[in-house]
Length: 398
Image (tube, rainbow, N blue to C red):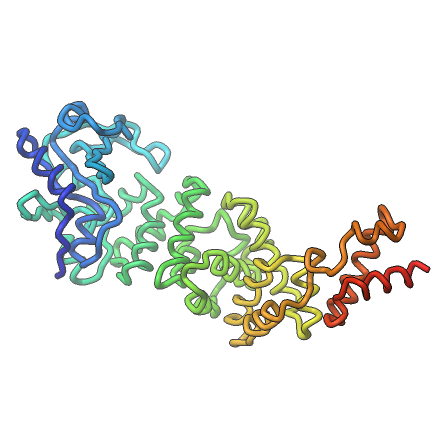
């Protein structure tokens, strides 16, 4: 099993806490990623020191979560979260503990965590604490709940989404008892804020296995956002053919598939329910609509589509169309048109509204003439010339 050494500033925090008589351990996702040979994005430290003691030891820190015992310690420009060992009370809202209690031992702190692979700790000298055999589960590439799975998901329903997300990101399987508990407790997913559900979906969509997003549907975690669950989805593999850094493309593909199977009324209603930002709702909705109507067959049709919906939405529709419609070369066709520099919008038209006003046009007539000239140029791009278009406009008016 691989092992990544934490950076100096993290070791400094650990050793400093220890030198003041406190226990201190690396915990959570950072230890999991270290064992997997991945460089952690964040470093989390658990300690026996109370928050006020941590703040006394490290004056240059922020009280980012005192209620839960967390402070963010800064060393120069780097930072790590330091949290006091704690136990948690009941979770009335199935997301947050009603109360936390600070405790003095590491095992109690680790026992409140979601999965065994995230319940491993390392001391400053590299000794490992693994009371729930998380290392074995990492070696076996298994996602297993700490303790009783149903209780873990009853406490925090978001953990069910996280299980699927870790499966997609790490390529691990969800252990059978844990998976059974997800299906039993799936109805609690309705208690999770839409923004958190959206974020988990996006992380899955941007993972190496984006098709795992359909596991959320199969397990019942998305029921409150769907009209129905499909019996079987055959288009899931299309997601992985789209660029990983293009979230909009993968969201559009997901919406197009769900619309095709009658799972959602529309991309707009689905994304609105998930509290997506307005710009992405518009772009994704337009792209999905293009896919459900008809992809252009001629250069002029592409240009008219670009004029109506803009480059971003049309590019998205073309990319998704490539993978959903049996590798059609839509993106290649679109790129060729964009590269040609041919006019498809008023800003690229060789005449402006001011030019037409010199002919006495104004108001509605001016707007109609601009649209007439644009339509003409989209069909005959070689005639996008200032004098020629002015003559055409003048002749049409006369």
